[in-house]
Image (cartoon, rainbow, N blue to C red; front, top):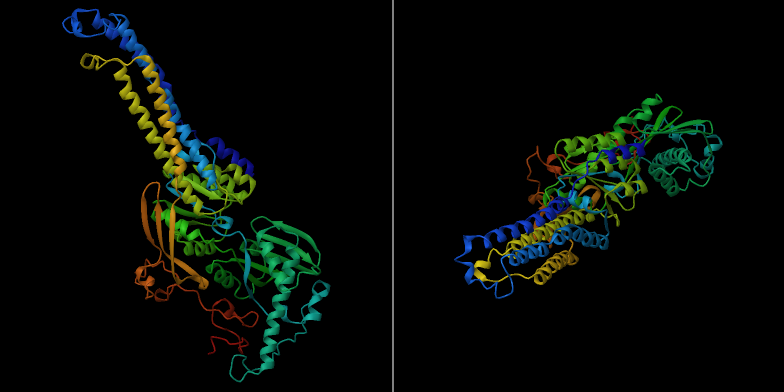
Length: 594
């Protein structure tokens, strides 16, 4: 299906006829016509009475010419001095040198068409996973939805017997009425709560690791990596009746237990009984930029794990330079859920209105088509198999070098080093090459516009000087060499320069970019881009109007994530940022009870 979509998009793309070919196809007939016209006009003038009083003072007869051979000399000089070569060399030499410069800078450009299109790009559409993000998802949070997995009454059979020797946990005593978060809470009770939480996490992750063992899916790799951190991946139980459901998740049997791992579609497709707070926990993780994956055991949701794929270090810089220095609209197009997509977009500076989520490969193609029909010149940046149809449909497909082979084959431009900042270099280089091509055309057309009239003898009545064919040939060759030298000057191209200023901490305590200074040595453009408002850059409260504030985090306008409990009792809603509802409270250090 993906291959068919790629072939359809490629076959429907209209070819762009090169400007130089159009001129060259008409240039040769024009030169021949000019040569014949020159001979006819001069022959008629010299062999008529129109110049009888004037031509007697012309020295052409002393130089061995007559009224028929002088027009022939002018005609031949016109034919020789005209230089279609300069016009023909203007584009291919610049493209050849420019693509070589791109290759030296880690950018593979497949011919002149991607270059011509890249210079006029008005919209850049990014895929998320592996393009904007690092493509290395990790389990960041595990939110327990109940305390069932911490109880010894839960039947583990041989599928999780490895816990019994390692975790001699005791069920939390229901009759105990003391609060673990109170000052009078005893240490034994607190220890039992922590043991219950640890046991539940280990059991949930054990079943998840059993279900995902052997899978190459990024989410599966993240789950198995977390299981390895918890040291529970050494004796995974074999699975039975494994089913991978596209766009939903996986389903299998581990021992006597039925395991479902997936998204909301998975929950609804299998009529999973939702534990209290399941959807709230998923929404909480998604608002933090994580992909929420629910683990259900025996038809009931038991935990929601948050999988985070961090944005690349250069993502925010690239997006802001595209928008504020190049004047290009930026969109995010992903198959992930809308909350996660918007959280990632918010961190790197993409407007939430330009985020399209839950998109399948065919949906991505349709979105690119809509943008093109709206008059946008679209560049699609992606790395995966699912991105390939959209890469083919876009005016310019730009593939990440570390991506799949089909994406690389589809892209007209390949960022070999997989650096997003190379996209800025590619667009800047395309614009620089096009400027060089225009200069070559101006020189070639200007040369011919001046040389042909001179060779035809328009100044002979005043200067009494002719351009002999051997000088015309030398001038023609010099014109071609000058165009070639002009193209070779592209070898001195200098990539854009960036200066980043970091300041007030952004999400998860990481320093964020506040200001970017952009300089393009080739075009002379300079820009200073402010990512945060000036007030926050001075480490003062945000001064943005509440309805337009995009600063994050921003305590002044409530643009912060809710505080969560790190040692909540399994199933307590404080784990996903809501007030504790335990009665009595069994959470260690509960914020709601302070």
